[in-house]
Image 1 (cartoon, rainbow, N blue to C red):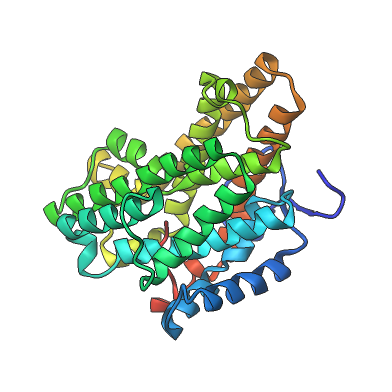
Image 2: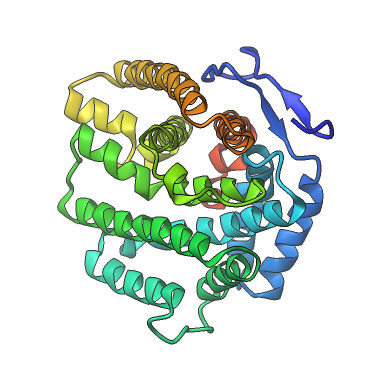
Length: 329
């Protein structure tokens, strides 16, 4: 770890939380990045009215980036913060209002945004989300190898497809099965694109033979599960009030036949089991590929897991702010 970061270990007195065998750290330049993200949002008109800008501020996007990318260079941290800002607005577009249960409209929006990102259709630059997404894409393309951009785009595509799956479930008033939900939650949470961004902490993105190594794939999958499951835990109260079924605790209650308290306990048990597996897979990956790059990447996944919780414990995103709080990703 670099010496200019502040290491934090969560204590039980702060909140009901998940325990990790590694500490959380926050990037020291968070205030700089927060200011620049808000400038970026205004300059590109990514949030075109006060309500949307307030939601970005309430979500503490720069703080989320600073907790999950504590060792990043400033340029990478800024990219992550700006991407998070536009992703939260995109979440709101898909998850709230009539669109959330309209698969036809979601499919049409998917074609638009994916076509713009991949360059298949002319970009609608009057759309503020389009402006933000294309700016992120172009910054990745300008500063990093093209194969990395393609990798990031392919994982981001699954997020759009998962939104269509969710819209179909809402239209049908269907609660997905447990295994199905866990599998699809890995895509609806958009965590894999962040796992890709972790590679920008290295001197070079990981080569294909390392990225596709089954053990590293397992590490990334567990990192994804942990972030999504804890997100479901921290956003539970709000989602119960809104009737949202895409939450692991709700699925465990409805499909697993548990009480709400029993479902929470089961999520925590599953979480702890996954963390033990995560620790084991990390040691196997280091044995299979004992390089500085792999060690650095695994340290980064540790930081992402522990840091996400630190953000969630403090973020206004999970407080009682009504419409000021953006929907949990």
